[in-house]
Amino acid sequence: MLPTLPSEHLKLTTRAQYLRFRRPRVCRLNRCAQLITVGVLIVDIRHKPTENDRVMHDWFRQTGCPEIIVANKLDKLKKSEIEPNLARIKEVLMLGEEDVLIPFSAEKGTNCDLLKADIQNALEEN
Image (cartoon, rainbow, N blue to C red; front, side, top):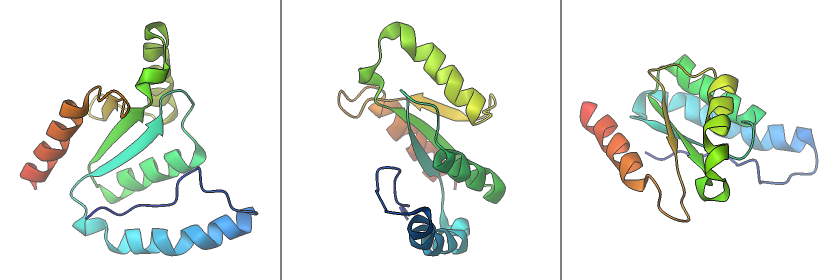
């Protein structure tokens, strides 16, 4: 099962429209929580995680659903920017040692095999 929610990039005119659009999807996701083997939260490594990123991460924690956090757009950073940006993501999302955070580049395929392996391991565990 691959549930999705509207992304940050979806532009709606008002906050009320956004909440009206989002609410039914979150309710459906809550009903499906037991069916989700692993969740993949994709954040932009270049920026501090958004409010939506934090809400989704909190949802994974509250439901006990295993989560892999993918910090995408790795190819857009200089090598010296990678560790500070990963540290910022860890701080904002309050990640611990047990949390999985994968720096990733969809463009170049960096860490694609690692992500596939982590998803496969999660599927095999359940």
